[in-house]
Each structure stands twice: as C-alpha cells, then as structure tokens.
Amino acid sequence: MLYQLVKILARLAIKFYCRNIAINKKDILQTDGPLLLAVNHPNSFLDAIIFCTLFDKPVYSLARGDAFKGKFISKLLFSLKLLPVYRVSEGVENLEENYKTFDLCKEIFKQNGIVLIFSEGKCINEWHLRPLKKGTARLAISSWEDDIPLKVLPVGINYSSFQKFGKNVKIFFGNFITADDIKGDNSHGKNIQSFNTNLLQQLQPFVFEIDKKDAKALHQKFYVPQPLLKKIFLFIPSVIGWLLHAPLYLPVRRFVKKAAFDNDHYDSIVVAILLLAYPLYLVIISLLVFVITKQWLSFLLLLILPLLAWTHVQLKKQLD
Image 1: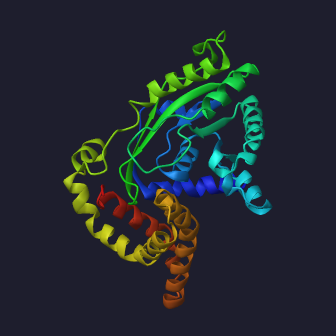
Image 2: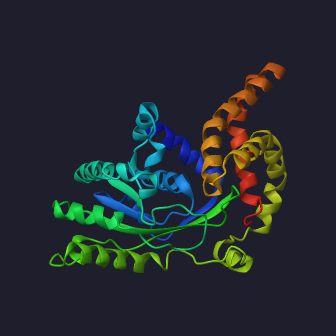
Image 3: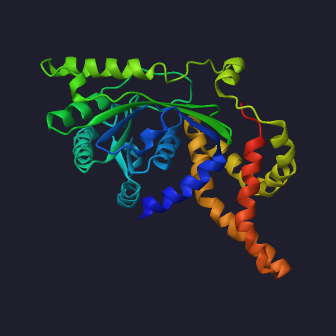
C-alpha cells in the first residue's frame, strides 16, 4: 500500500524534476517477469525511483545494507520494496545476509516479479562505466540453477546534471541475457566471467563516457532544443513559477548542501525531501490564500502551482 502511494507521488514529481526522459525501447516497460534489471549507478537512489515510476509492475530494488538500521527503518524500507545488500566495507559479518536477500529475490522471480540491481555496486556521480561486481552474475546464475526462467536486462542510465533539477535523462535497454547465453558446462567462476563479459559489452555503448569539464560533449549528448514559440508562451508563467516555489526549493537546496557531505547523494536527497514536502507546501499556500481571500477558488492553486512549476522546468538552464 505504501509503495503504491509513493509510486503515484513519484510519478507526478518526476515530471517536474526531470524535463525529459528519453527511452530507446519503451515497450520493455510493460515486460513481465521474472526479470532482473542490471543497471549502472550514477545517481544514488534517484536511479531506483526513476525505474520504479517507469515500469508498470512493482520493481524491487537492492539497496546498500547499512541503511537498514533498526526495526522501524528496516520495516519501512521493506514496505517500499527495498532489499538490503551488503558490501565488504559495511562489515564482513554482514555478508551472510546477502544470501537471505538473494533467496528473497528468487522468490520474487518465482512470482514473475522484477528486481533492480546496480551492477557497479557503488554510486558515483560521473559519466563513466565502472568495473562490474559479481553480485549480478551470482544472482542470475543461482536463479538459473534453481530452474527459474530469469531474463537479465542490461540498462544504461545517463543524466544531464547531478546538481540541477529539470534534468534530461537518457535510458537505454539492451538485449535480454538468459541461461542459454551462459555455457552450463563451465566452472562457476568461468560462468560468472562469461556473464559479466556479456553484460559489460552491452552496457558500454549505453553509458556515456564524458569528462566533467567537457561542456561541448555534454551539450551534444543531452541538450534538447526548445522551439521559440514555446519559450515565448511559457516565459511569464515560468518566472511566476520560480517566484512561487523559491521559498520551498532554495531552503531545501541550502540544507542538503550543508548536510549531505557525500555529494554523490545530493541529488537524490533533494528529490526525496521535495517529494515529501511539496504536497504539504501546496496545502499551506492554498490555505493561506483562502484565509486571506475567503474564496474557495483558492484551492485551485493545488493544480495551478504544479503547472507553473512545470513551465519553469521546461525553460530553465539545462546543463551545469
């Protein structure tokens, strides 16, 4: 229930936080399971949020295990279909918990579900594909050994910015990897190597390789031209939208910049706070206007304010 509610809010919010999401194979979004999404990891949990909003079916996401601290937090994260996976840096003693998570994933696969795994293992804000960890291969091969007809889908996701809202996103879906693509007569180690080679070959053309200082390359890959008539028509609503939302956005941005020492999570934290705070902000503004004007039409602001925010997203600066 909580997952479905958050998904509805996130689907609305992503329209404002992302100007454009381009996908090469949109029909895959209706794919049934059992399916494992093998994705690169450039932008913390915003990566997972985007895929959860795009797919029709629920998407279970593997998340860093150290976030699952305490019974309440763990229960909350599980209700959001997040499953813990531990790295060596989070304690060797916790690695045994990964077997439980993999067993949960296989149960999801048996129900034709979808699981998302970040094959690089760690989030870094960069336009670069890092070496793949073995977790994706191990989960896939273990599922095939249990006769689960799992399909693994290589996915590359790229962002025009890791700091600005109104970003352009490009997503590329590859070709399914199945048990038939991995030779079963090889040793376990060679099967993992064969799987990762296949996955790497598909991900490489999907993940942009761009130096952070190469403004020209960023422009070529991500810039979306805006028709002049659109700019003229939306200019005034865009300015009004910025003025009305600055009292919410600017304090959130300032707070996160001070609190988020790990900058690779800045973008996602901003999105998460705005996702929770924006509905409350709309209600407060509408109530204030109603108290002042005594007009029930004040509550139309619940619709008008998001539209004004959308106009600003369409026209604001696209790249860092």
